[in-house]
Length: 172
Image 1: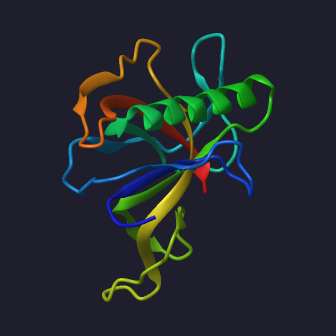
Image 2: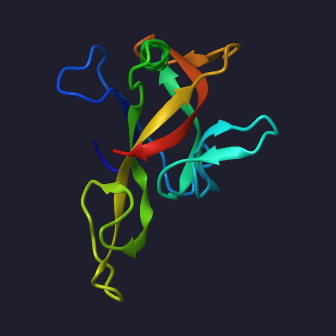
């Protein structure tokens, strides 16, 4: 893992599918965004449509990610999302780990609400922390995702454009 990368992985020591590393992002890149959803997770909805909230209030975010990847990486992304979906269908935890080494999580009092890869204290508040983060997400790929053909790389492998979303469901 390195600066400018997003990594999507199955948690655990020996995952059935290797992590997918998406490279080449920059903090001002419009190919990826993380948007605030709110302070609570709705666990169900009433008959009138009101959200039923359980547990402590925590910030939630939704990610929108676009990537230029090879055909093999596109197939791997689909396999990771299918694995997650199959886990949830069998009533198991199917959350994936998303590691963000593009933008640092905002500074907040220690301990940080996110899992930081390497916490750094700002000079203006030594008891606060910020850094690159990891979170648990549920990822989704549109059923009609065309994996748009962009061209061929120098080694002859096809280059694709894929877009997918992820909703944070916990800390990593």
